[in-house]
Image 1 (cartoon, one colour):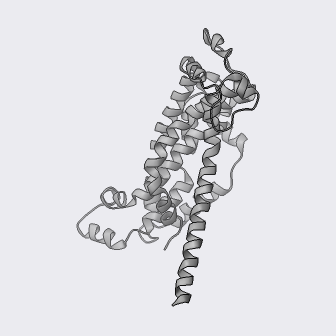
Image 2 (tube, rainbow, N blue to C red):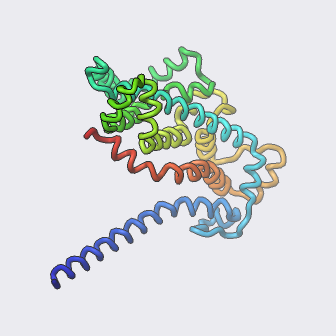
Image 3 (cartoon, rainbow, N blue to C red):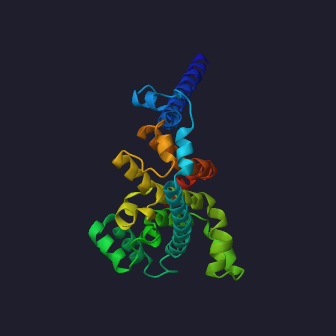
Length: 295
């Protein structure tokens, strides 16, 4: 009896240790975000002197007043929102329409394995930046929103996750729907999509975060800085290490440092993802686990 009690106590201690470790790890991931927010709300001298840690020093909203007047920032913000909307919808639709036939059996879809291997090799064997750029330029997409959306229209990793999730759906549902006369479109709409919410939420989150955080393609494919998405715009500001002044903004810069302003822009850029993620997070782990392997 004492041995059982001792084992239970040991298990509880281990559980508490794991819980505290994960809690500490979770809090540590928030520290950079808190530090960025503190810098954006601090006065110039404190930031320049490295005095700001996790709380603002000389609290002020000057950086955010500057951002409200920065038309280029909001233009870039709008381009990123448009990119996420167009790219997310296109990724979702094409991933579903690609994964569904590939999830069928070899008998139902002859040659499916050939297509699967084509996608896998396409994901592994990257053609390189130069052919990628020349192809986009050949279609005259440079300096358009479609250059940011169409090259990654079919996210192969998302297709693989969704395909495996579809293959784990009980075949009895499929057979019962077919007996009732359902065609493939009805199977997809009424059976597969409603039962695949975790996987759909997972690939949607991947697409949104991927499009929102991407900066390199904007830098390569946009010749006009006015067409930069938000992350490319911020990356250029950080590299230049100086803000671009417009009109009355010069007066505000007397109270700001570049670090304060960049921190404010970084924090504003994080807000959309911080808002969206909690709504999709509860599906995320389940979608990854069930879509990663085939039972």
